[in-house]
Amino acid sequence: MKASQGIQWIPWSELTSTQRITRLVVFGVLGISILVVVKNAILPQRAGGPAPATTQEGATLSDSERHDGIESLCKVFQIYGLPKTDNDVSAAVKNASELFKLSGGETVDRGNYIFQSLANDFRSKKLGGSDCAEAGAPLPTSDDNGAAAEPSP
Image 1 (cartoon, helix red, strand yellow):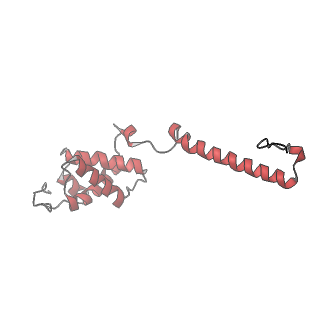
Image 2 (cartoon, rainbow, N blue to C red):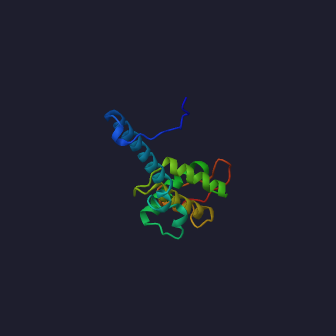
Image 3 (cartoon, rainbow, N blue to C red):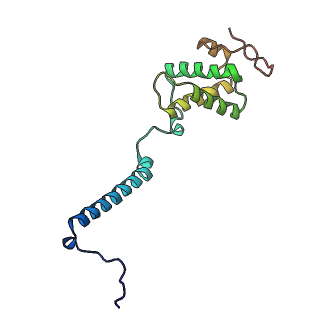
């Protein structure tokens, strides 16, 4: 009895037409699978897609981005109050991102950057209740905790 030598490659010339088609399909599927893996694993790291928020540091906001962002955040602040901690800022950004889409058609990353930047300005008191009133979303005179918010003009 002759011992099996494992997988043996049959030369192309000895294959039937069905075997040739099967071999081409298998190699095609394998090739496409490899391309998909390479595209998803390597290409996004090199190029394409919106810039992450960290690369937007120092980027200036347009007047419309600023107005829309303030208006959206102030609607969140009407419910939850002005942010006092980093967690409050994160929650406000998350809520604003989920509830509002900026009118300029910004990417999700850009929108989050706008909300983050403005929420930090509210936390550091560079912006306040009067900015919400100007944007058409005045803050109440007190929040749910009974603490007085900045008065609207």
